[in-house]
Length: 271
Image (cartoon, rainbow, N blue to C red; front, side, top):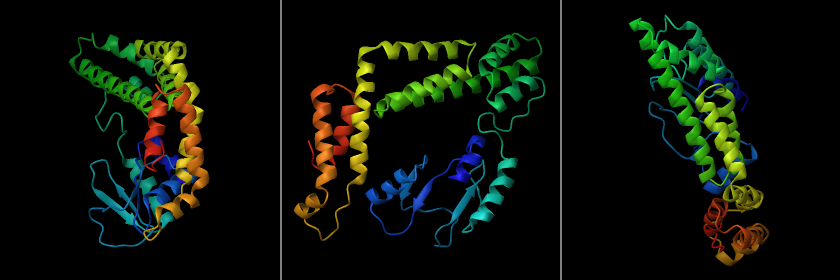
């Protein structure tokens, strides 16, 4: 986690793979307990890997080429520092900017993006072809970035996480303050807070999180274990899932939170 926190702002993407024996639920529980914010897969193959040692780290550069692999964390840290320093910015890539260096620097720092968008709009009127071309490039990249954030907010709502939806909208409003993008995000956040359906999502969320917590505490069924014995062993979490699901069904059956909770419960035959 310390490595992830250190390099995530530089665009580093982490994908974890469990390559030993283990059930999906057990692996998911470890990821939840450790609060890993990156995806974790049960099994997988790394192209270019000819060893089978654990743990092992692989680093791919911005072009997707495997440039490093090691089982030693200290070596990985050093390699990340080396390749991270040489890697292009994940938002702007390695395009050379010669005219609009002030705006370029602002985007690299992820500060005052609203102000930068306003400045770029003026630069789009420039009679200097090179300056105009750079303004078009930077504007499109910022528009794409804002679109990605907006898509994340929508996905959080689809996942039954309305609080995180508001958090992302707040992030957009703050980063793009002074521009229509920021104002739109701010207005959307205010509209959601006043929307009856969204208020129900927020009210249901805490119960939904309890379903998720109980879901992740269910012990996996062994291959030679009959269902009755497995259910008896998991009587507490399964009972919690049932109780919470009934509560959601009674008061919040028309919410996405309920739908997500019902999907989790259905995996254990709980309705």
